[in-house]
Image 1: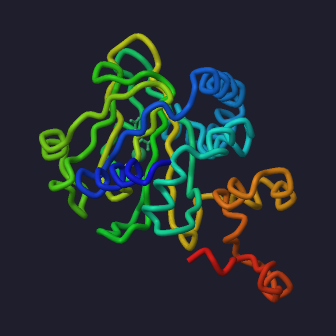
Image 2: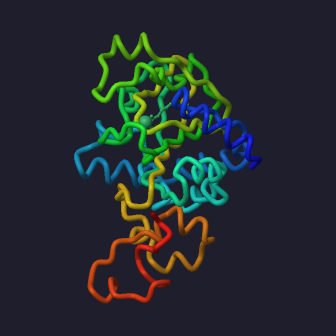
Length: 262
Ligand SMILES: O=C(O)CCC(=O)C(=O)O
Ligand SMILES: [Fe+2]
């Protein structure tokens, strides 16, 4: 990506908290992934139900690629790589990534609550960057993201009234990615149309932030041999935590947490 384009996106993230990256994926890839998600939904429903969480986590498949590897095509190549590298000042990893959808005709989904995808506020230190991959064209009618206006962002969760009067909507096309500072309060909008609106939510962090799932162990340590170096980096294979002394005492190039991870 050209340096001036990277700079524009970073300036937008700095100034208004978010930037829209247009045309990151072609429609065929998104269609294939949407079909793949349909196939794993029953597995997710079963596990969510077993845990007594069907109400809380319905309309979502967290960590989707753990059960459907095809999702990894969205990360390899990663269209936001150059911007993430500039934002984090070097290496970054994926903290979490999952699909979520808002059903038609005003149905409720938990992503419509005002939220951040992180627990801790980190002010201007660049620890977290969110991505929302649009799997459908998105407008105000079908639930475009509400995003707080940066100068009104607060450490504490704002009231509904404050949020609604100090936020803007982000519309985009299927295949676009909204990148935004993880400190920003946001929510999905309500879908008033009669067609589902789908997204992938991503959170990228500096490599020393603990992942929401231990992806290298969830996918298997040998899986690293089957994927590109870039994808292995993003999934956290270069920033693992050893779990015994033999894993800890390693020559430099074999260390679980590599020296270039910050
Ligand atoms: O659907 C959206 O626009 C936002 C979704 C979101 O914030 C999330 O899944 O964490
Ligand atoms: Fe979110």
